[in-house]
Length: 450
Image (cartoon, rainbow, N blue to C red; front, side, top):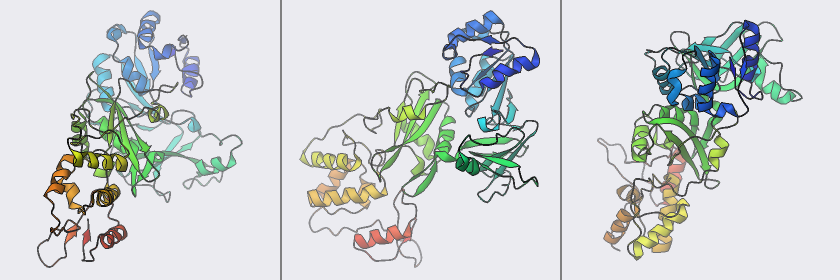
C-alpha cells in the first residue's frame, strides 16, 4: 500500500489503517511526492506497490506518465474526493488494462467513504456512478420535504448508519443544521447527515452523483447549478478537466466563466465549446468566458482550487479565435466606448458579439438608453438582434432617418387573433418586468412573454 496522501486529508485514514487490518506493507512516499507522478511511477515499480489512492485531478496527471506500462505490480487504484469523469475512467483502462479502478464517495462526517463502485471496462454507461452503500450505511435521496424521490429524479443525498459523526465540535448550530433527526428510524437518537450533494437513483439501484447544491448561484433571476454546467462540459471529447465559477462584475452583473484544461496542447475553439453547450443547456447557463489552462490549480489535497481560479484574470471576453477589429470611424468609436462602459470590458472590437461578451436582457436596455442619451438615436430592442456587434449596429444607425417610425419592440404577429409576441434572451419570463419595460418604452399593446 502506498501512503502518499497528506495526513490532513481524511483519505489518509484508510491508507494508514487498511494495511494494519489486512497485514499489508505500508510504503510512505516522500514529502510532496504525491504531486510528482514521475516519482510515484518509479516508487511503484521499485516497491512493487499493489494499491494506491488518487483524487481524479491527480489521477488525470498520473495516467499521462510514459512509464506507466512498467507498473505491472499495480492491482487496484481507489479514486475519491471528486467526481470521476467517464473519459478518465476510459483513459485509465487504456493505460492500465490489468488493474482495477474503484470509485468511492463519502464525507469526513461519515467516516470518509459511504458508497463504492467498481468501474467497468466496457460499460454502456456514459457516467461513472458512485455505486451503492457499503456495509452498515444507509443512503437516502430526498426532496426538500425529506421525502424519497423516484428513480431518475435529482434530490439531496443523505447519509445514515454507524459511520456518522456525532456532530461538529463546539458548533451546535451547524450540527443541528447538518445532522438532522432520521425520519426513517424510530430511534430518537438516529441522525441523517445532509451532504449538500445532488444525486439520483439509477434503475439498477446504483447512484449517480450530479454535483453540489451549494454550487447553486442566482443570475438575473435564474437559479443555476454550476455543477450541471461542469458535467455537460466534461462530456466534450476534448475537455480533460473543467470548472465553472461566477465573476461578479458589479452588484447586479454576474457572469459565468469556464476554466478548461484541454486534452490536447492547443486550445479548443471557444465557438465550438459554446455551440456544444447551446445544444444541451439553456442560454442563461452558457458561460460568457472560456479560459484555457495547461493544468487546473489544485489544493494541497489535489482537488481543483476554485478560489485560485477566481484570481486568474480575464482581460476580456472576446473569443480568442476572433480577430480584433478596432473602430474605423467616429461612430464606431463612440459605440465602442458605450459598449465598454456598459459591459465593463476593454478593449472591445467592432465585430465582437454583444451577447457573447456577457450581454443580457437587462444590459440591452441600459445600452440602448446610453445610445439614446449620447448619440441621440432612439433604437428599438430589435436593433440588437439585427446587429449584435458594433459594426452592424453602426450600419443600422446610418440607415436610420429622423422620419423613420421605429417600433419599440420586436413584434411577431401569430396566426389567428392572438396579440403580438416579443421575447428577449435571458429574461426568465418575468411578466412584471416585461410589463414595466413595455410601459417604459412606450407601448401598452398586449403581448405574451416567452
